Amino acid sequence: MRHTVPLQTGLEPFPGYRLRRLLGYGSFAEVWEAEAADGTLCALKFLPAEREQATPSELRSLQAIRQLLHPNLLRIDRVWCHLGYIVIAMERADGTLADLNATSRTETGCVIIPEHACLLLSQAAAALDFLNARQHHVEGKTVSIQHCDVKPSNLMLFGETVKLADFGLAALMSGPVVPHRPSGTPEYAAPEVFRGRLSRFSDQFALAVSYCELRGGRLPFDPPPRTFHPDYFHPPPNLSMLSAVERPIVARALAIAAEERWPSCVEFIDRVARLFL
Picture 1 (cartoon, rainbow, N blue to C red):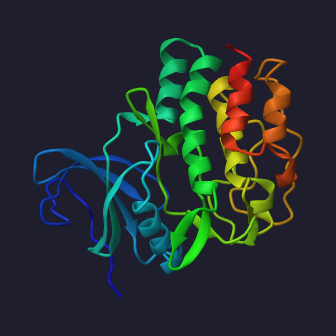
Picture 2: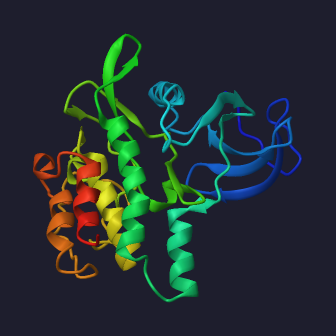
């Protein structure tokens, strides 16, 4: 069993990649800025390979997504194991929608206006619909992909372009509803996730929660348990942070029953965007 070693500036975890500085970290991962052999900057994400969540299915999902091409999916250049980590080399973004939200509130005291929120999230919606469509060929099967952790901090900014990132929890689906171990961030997770299932509309629920946060500065629900409990039931969403015309559209995307949500993420965001044309 290989144990992880501390990461530090100057370390070369793969020939041609040298760590420059820590960009951020979460419960399980660290993300570092690195300089590639040609002098360009990239981001390296380090996931401890021994943690419980590091499974063959996770690596299979990462490798599958690495092969996909879409303008709103973060490009993954390489995945390898080194020093006890799974290392993911990817594009270096300017920031995240979570950063933009925090900056907007700090510098202007205002939330992101609906037109801008829709412009940004329409790109995320396009990426999600691309993943969620059952059209991807993996190991001889045609599957759809649920991201399973949609939230503002996983939506990266490149100027005004948004790219969906962080595919470590992505799940391959061979049907509209499949059993799946609860995973992701509970505050954004759809009700069916708490019951140990994924639906083809689970990512849409998380996108709607993200919309509420960007538009109103808070989530539409009180915080759920920090871990997934199958007996937790979502209360009705509090959408008072939104205008009256936005609420029914967002409420549908937050429906408890997955099949009652919008047919696609793009249609959901498009319906909101039409209000402000």
